[in-house]
Image (cartoon, rainbow, N blue to C red; front, side, top):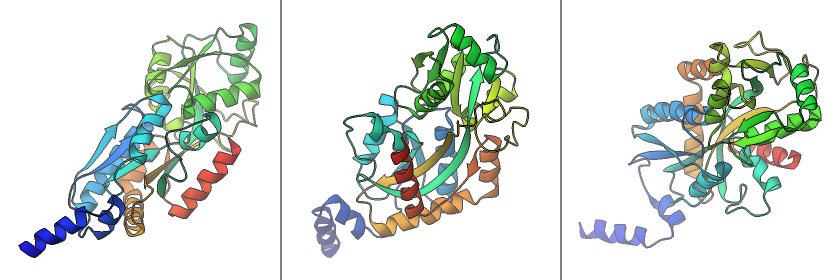
Length: 310
């Protein structure tokens, strides 16, 4: 018993990263996945579905923790500063690659402060409009916006969010101006399109597909080379006359930077295993997203490429 106590004291006198390396039998307590957006977004849904699979695989509860604010940077900063012991993960979207080109200063470094684990999913971008808007196509929407510059409204998950940049990218290509209405999550912005309090929203297909299929909003276009199999009646941006709009949403999982490589490798295997489950693949597809695992190196490469683009 004395030797055990001495070992424990020695371990906890080490820096957090070395403590994590010395800890045996990981995992021996619950894990958490931080989501920097509101419940109801695909980021949140994906975290919960993956968490359910990891709970079964690891034999430990995986808890999803929503930490909202600052367009997603608040929750991301919480994850960056977490103890690097393999018990805290971040499930992020494209915003991770956008912020460095948008903000002069961030409380974290998206590259240096995280160890990438795996890609999670991809989804086309979709333009949605309220049913009462007198525009049934993208071209009609653009014509209406030109006739009423700055009067039409578009909702996003907040300044600097993926939805915000995806919207600004389209407006820039179309050469029109609309009024930005920020929310604390993309699901909230889509809810206001349903309620006809704002005119349009652009988000990942996974976030708005259910509302389009139920007829509560009108899907005007999706990105990608071909139409989505889950919304075959919605044309692509290319078919709608805007072939330059190629925004594709993606999601990934990361851990704090000093997480030991052996735990990153283990997490990568566990996440890949979860994404291979037929039930998870089907649930992702039903949300308009494609489950997509990767190596940590592949995810890091994609993040670097997108950062350069933005």
